[in-house]
Amino acid sequence: MTFVERHGLWTAAQVEAALEVERRVRAEELEVVRLSFADQHGILRGKSVVGSDAAKVMREGCTVTTTLLAKDTAHRTVFPVFTAGGGFGMREMQGAADALMIADPTTFRTLPWAPRTGWMLCDLYFADGRPVPFSTRHVCRQVLQKLTAAGYDFVAGLEVEFHVFRLLDAHLRPSDSGQPGEPPEVALLTQGYQYLTEQRYDQFDPVFEILRRDVSALGLPLRSIELEYGPSQCEFTFHPGTGLEPADAMVLLRSAIKQIARRNGYHATFMCRPRLPNVMSSGWHLHQSLRARAGGANAFMAGDGRSDLSSVAMHWMAGLLTHARAATAFTTPTLNGYKRYRPYSLAPDRVIWGRDNRGVMIRALGAPDDPGTRLENRAGEPAANPYLCIAAQVLSGLDGLNRKLDPGPSADAPYEMEAERLPASLAEALVALRADTCFAEGFGPAFVDYFARIKEAEIARFQAEVTEWEQREYFDLF
Image (cartoon, rainbow, N blue to C red; front, top):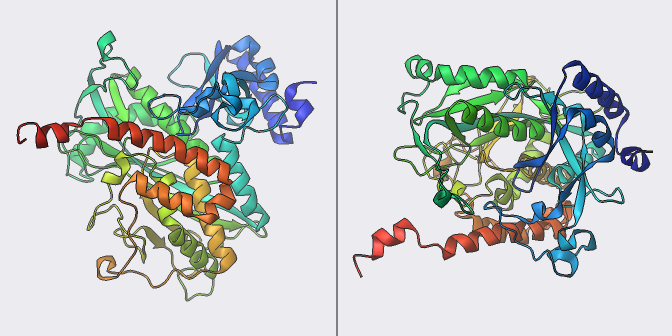
């Protein structure tokens, strides 16, 4: 028996999909199959196997070191992996021990930009068949199972802003390397501020064509392509998906766009606010609703001919607001992302909701008997780990449902109402996260501590750096 069979890791649909993967590898004469998993930051890592070995590796797994789960955004190992328990308190992860990547054959694709190359998303398991508890795709799946038990499926649509620049200098000299290395030097593709003008769109269109072609060929549910407000800034939106689908789509989208852009002489970034003159912040707006498992109706639609939102939607939204400060650690997990939150802007800075109002954190979109009724959470940055971002939404919303919380009145004029502020920094968000009992129960205290420790290590590195601001502020004055 294979590892997958011994531990019953695949559903019937995955078993069937695996046979189709084998057929396609042979028929398309694929030479390489990339096996990838999303790490704690939502960055894809993994290994590649030759096409002739793909069928066996798919069922027996591919080893990777567990130190990959111990790294911050500079790829520095945060935990003392060579101590007892490896810094995790887990024997299975000490000494840089291995875990197994087990492919999910339902995620198989061929990469349009990489000749004769297949790709599959993987989950991480220990040698005894147990899921690795810090694997964020697994964490999200566990949280979604809680929602399933409550009688609902999570439905989400992605609205993702990012930048694409012309690559001038990749900075590949040995002196440019490091942890992290020197960022690339870039030029704009368009000047900014002519929001949605066709003239600017047409200037961007040669790049849009390259990205659109390959993103569509991947099977991602692309809905629209837009030129955003800032210089060299754009936005892709996607048709809604269910369960893990939106998170899977987001990690593949980010990786694909960066790879496609680089192969064509461009640099794409999902960094929230790049340090470039006149460049604007990018957000990730998560449109969400619930689908009743009994009957398949949108549970956010009131259906009474009078109300814009059902009681389910109102309770769910109240949960999002109640846990918003703690959830910001997952929706905005970088130091940079908090520079986007500003008053009187399209980026929220306070915990409040409104009906079709882009100045609030939660924008309610719906009408009586509208099957497209949904909530739009505007707090996220595009660098967020989508599995943790979505899991945090589900845990927050479920708490609102279970306790029948009230979101309060709609903020039609959000800056005329008193409202709690979103955290002003990642450090403030982590304090809120550690104090939130809903996330401690939903994720488990060990996972919350694990995630917070990685982020606290990033903050400590930042605080130890002498910034250009400090140099300009003090070097001449004092």
